[in-house]
Image (cartoon, one colour):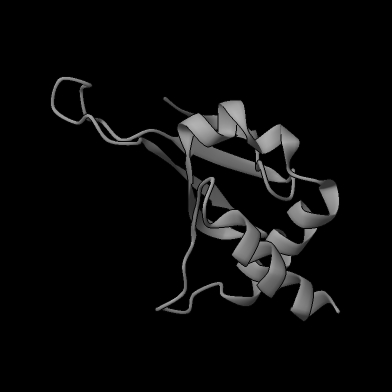
Length: 98
């Protein structure tokens, strides 16, 4: 998978791509790579995107976008979104909006 879609965070144009690992080689969670002009590069766990992301409130998604924009190009910041990391990213992004 490698195609132009909407960024799951800011809804801007983005390219989402899955790692080229066959399921018989990797049994852990699969993270999709997202390249977005606004949010830059980040990863989102495929299962969370399919089964949990829609439950994240819009205000929290805006805060996550603010977090991703603020940490764009900086090392040492978590940029992987999953069922455990999104709340902390939203809190930190809300502080930047706030």
